Length: 248
Image 1 (tube, rainbow, N blue to C red):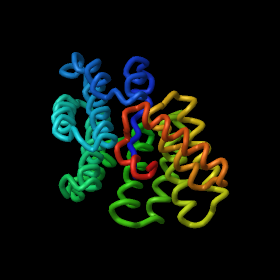
Image 2: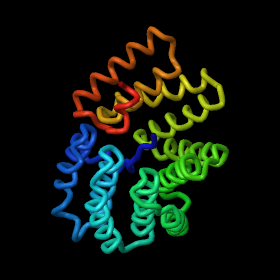
Image 3: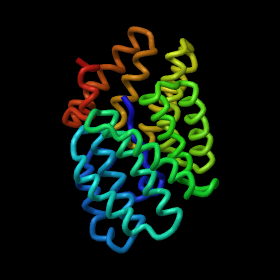
C-alpha cells in the first residue's frame, strides 16, 4: 500500500515532527493552524499533515480538502503555488486509490501544474517525482515509469538532504526490485528504509517498513520482524489501518 512523504521543512519543525511521527496528525496540524492565514508555508504544511493522516486512517478527507483550499488561497509565489498543486494532486490520488472518488484526471492535471511551477532545482521536485511514480505504479500499472520516477526522486532527495523522503524512495524501489525477483536489491532497499525511519524516530512508519523487510527475509528473521511490526502497530492504535490484514 502506498504511503506519503512530506518535505524536509516539516521534518525540521521539532514539535510538529514529533507529533506527526507518532501518528498525532490532528495535534500537529493544530500547532500550525494559528499561522496559516498569513504564512503560506504553515498553511501548506498543515494541509500536508492532514493529507498524510487520510492515508493512514483512510478518513478525514473533507478536513484535508479544507486545509488544502486555504493553502492554495494564500500561496503567493510560483514555488508556493507549485507545492500546493503537488498536494492537490496527492489528495486526488489518495481519493482515487482508496475508492473515495475517482479523481485521477484531477491528480494528473495538478501534477502537471506543479511541474510547470516548481523550478528544476526546487526542493519540492523530488517529492513531486515520487508522487508521480506512485500514480504510475498504482493507478497506471506502469512499473517502468514508476521506477524511473522513483529513481529521479531518490537522487533528488539525497541531493537535497531529505532523509525522510529517501526512506520512501528506498522502500518503493525495493518493492519494484522484489516484484522483479531481485531479492538482494529488495532486502537492501527495505533495510535502508527501515534504518532511516528508525534514525528519524518515525514511529508510525516503522511497522510497514518492518513488514516489508520481513517479506524478503529468511523465516527466523522474518518472524522477529513481524512480531516487532505487530507490537508497534498495536501500540499506535492499529494504524495504518490498511496494515492490519497483513499482520493478522
